[in-house]
Each structure stands twice: as C-alpha cells, then as structure tokens.
Figure 1 (cartoon, rainbow, N blue to C red):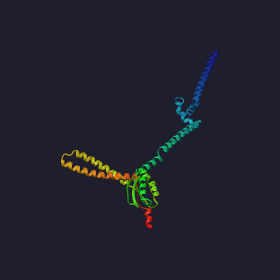
Figure 2 (figure 1 turned 45 degrees about the vertical axis):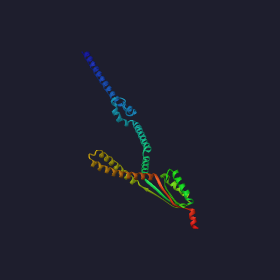
Figure 3 (figure 1 turned 90 degrees about the vertical axis):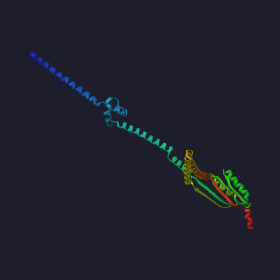
Figure 4 (figure 1 turned 180 degrees about the vertical axis):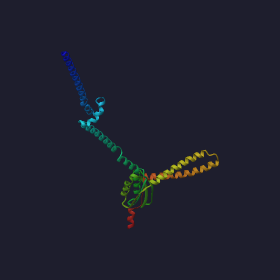
Length: 279
C-alpha cells in the first residue's frame, strides 16, 4: 500500500517538474523572441542607403530612429549634396544672365534709340583763298569723293564766289576740316545740329492716315451710282492726294537732310583781291 502511494507521489512530482520545465522553456523562448525583434538594427540599413528601405515595413520606424544612432553623418551628407546641387543651379543662372541679357540688352536699346533719331547738321564757312576758281573746283572734288554732291555753285566775279554741298553725315566733321585746309584764312565757321525726330514721327503718321483715306475714296469712286457722286469723290481724291504728296516730300527732305549734311562755303574773297585793296 505504501509502495503504491510512494509511486503515485513520485509520478506526481515528476509531472509537476515536467510542467514547470516546459513553462520555463516557453517563457525563455518568448523573451528571446522579443529581445531579437528589439535589437535588430533595421534602421541602420535605411541610413546607409540614404532613406531607401531595405525591407518591408521596417522603413517607417527606421526613418524616425535614424538621427539617434549615428545617422546624423548620413543626414549631413545628404544636406551637403543638396547644397552642392543648389549652388550649381545658382551658378548656371548667373552665367545665363550675364551672357544673355543685362547690359547687352540695355546697349541694344540705347543704340536703337540713337539710330532712330532724325538729326540734321549744317555748317557755314567764310574763308579767304588764293584762287577762287580753283578752290571751288577743289571743294566740288571733296564733296564727290566723300560720297556727296554739289548743291549750288556761284562765281559772280573772279575774286569772289560761293558753293554749297551735301556730304554723308558721318563725314561731316572730316569734310569741314578739309575745307578749312584749302583756305588762306578761315574768317568764321558755324555749325548747327537740330533734332527733327518728333516732326518726322508726326508727318509719318499723317502720311499713313492720308494714304488709308485715299484708298477708301478710290474704292467709293468705283462704287459711285451717279455722276454727281463720282465728281464729288474725285475732288476729294485730288485734295487728299495733293496733301499726301506734300507730306511725302517733307519726309523725303527730312530723311535726306539727316543722312546728308549741308555745308555752305562763301562768299569767299581771294587773298590777291584783298592785297590789292590794301594798296
């Protein structure tokens, strides 16, 4: 009887120890599992790869954990690269700016404004020369060789004469210097520059308006139903056409005067005549 009880107690004790051992193993296994999951440095791979997740859902928590575990150097590297990219972009803009616009565009505007102006330059010279006839001939040659022409030339007496010429505006100063070299004495030189840009612009606009009006009148003339209408329209056409021709002539004068400067020389008194008077 006692032997049976002892056997039962022994079995019970063994069973209790077995259950306790199984429970301890299960507990240890669970603790190992939790510890492994916590210590896995998933965020390190994220930092090393500069934000690209190495696996599945670990990417999100790894991003927040990165600054706490040596990821600051990776962050600085990224910001450094961004800074380099930004500086390059600014440099490109600067080069593009300096080469494409800026002072170049300003110079173009100034040149356009200057070239578009109607400036008329004129000059009057009063000189004393040795030979009037020869001097008039020399002045004519200077005008032609400079790309201009003689407007008028007069020699009422052997000892006096006058001449007026037109020369290209860009040769104006050079021609005056050449004319002065022909003289024994330059008594006076006067030059003038006048800006006719405003008048030229106004006349151009009026010319265009009259031209459009003339076109409409001619169209009406073709559609006139009666002789009286045709006569009335024809009178208007004649009047408008006359005004238009006057404006066009003024435009031509301003354009030519701006392109070719006017220089007048005389009346010139020869040195020989002056010496004779002194005697």
